[in-house]
Amino acid sequence: MSTNPLKFGSRLLLAAASFAILAACGAGEPAAPAAPAAAAAAPSDTAVWPTAAVADATTLGFTAEGIAALDARLAQSVTDGDVAGLTYILGKGGDIAAFKSYGVQSGDPKTGAPMTKDSLFRIYSMTKPITGVAMMQLYEQGKWAMEDPVSKHVPELAGLQVLSWKDGKVEMKDGKPVTVAASHEPTMKELMSHTAGFAYGLSGDDPANNAFRDTAVLASKDLEEMITKIKDIPLIYDPGTRWYYSVGVDIQGYIVQKLSGQKLGEYFQQHIFTPLGMTDTAFFVSEEKKPRFADVYRWDKDLKALAVNPERPDRPGFTDPNRMESGGGGLVGSTHDYARFAQMFLGKGTLAGNTVLKPETVELMRTNAIGDLKLYSDGTTANPGLPGVGFGMDFAVYDDTSVTGQPYGKGTHYWGGAAGTWFWIDPANDLFFVGMIQSMGGSRPEGMNFRNDSAKLVYEALAPTAAATAAPAPAKELEPAH
Image (cartoon, rainbow, N blue to C red):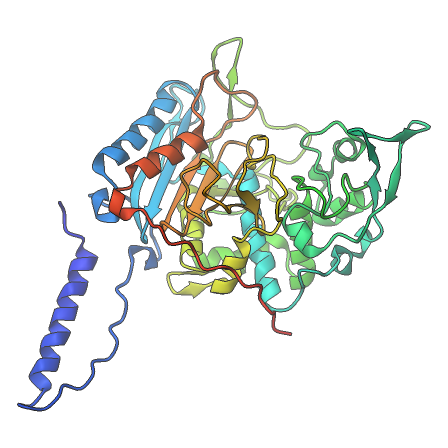
């Protein structure tokens, strides 16, 4: 077994300090109390972390066999043609147990440019937790409150009507949908937990979702134009009555701009990306970074092989700096950068000495805010609503692990992106996982379930003594400073 140099160095420093105290004490005189020893720096405290995994993952509480099985299964998914390529990273205790890349990044799915650990990916809805951090920074500053009506900050969204449903269908009259007044104005807390009643246009054959598609809300030229379109579309459900995956986080991005006086991308750069050292995350791919940008692939059922997806013709691409800065799904980033973002949450808002959130804010974000309402999506795929899973501020939370049937620790928060990217952050076990793939438009039959299979293997790899049993302390809602 290899020796962890940081831990070994800490033991040497502690021994030297103890010797110095003893030497300084006169015969028969009590020793002066020693000053509290500074906590040993973790690898994640450095500006460039993470670059590689530790030489021996058993030093982080994993079995060698378990890590090998995880790695082999993810590598096999590329060999099988589930994806053209992938990168993944597993962190624990402020260090990295595994960081690998496999397959092809761009071009021909068999012979194209190889995937690397610094390849860039469309992270789509994994943008949402980043927007959530920006919102919660402004919350800490007292610029909004949970029970504020959304219309306090976006007056254009005041007085929205709600579709009227009967027997599972929208009521129609004279060829038009029947709408009614909402029971109350959607609140900011509801906006951040997808219970405000907004539609999205990603799915659903109803007048609200159809209107999102017909008016191309998500293809707006900027956030201001987006709001002018949303204001004319009714809510799909009465606020607070359903969890419904929505445009709410794009509205949050607009609110960040209004409350901060900065464009969303500028705010992210100054207040999140720079402090956290996320040097490759942005709303577009610059010219010099294009060679690192991964293509999106789909399974072609006729060819029975992977094929490259063409760029969408109906909106600016990810290499266009003038595209709308979507807080709900617009960012491109690297595995490295998202690992730093995840580690910040394990550090209760701080990474490498830079604090972007207070610890109590982190706990508030990852505490269930929707009661007994059920989710039907994980940001990537639909599901019937898992028991024990709630939703906090812009990501889902494993709230009651006794009934989830999943291996995650209590308080694990997670989400995913439309092109298959996924992550989870488990504070009970002090670990995170980030997986990056680019797959949309069809998957290989019998292909790997990336989220479920990777989680099963990660927790099977934990040595029995490494599994945490303590749950995080319950969150307290902040009283913002005014």
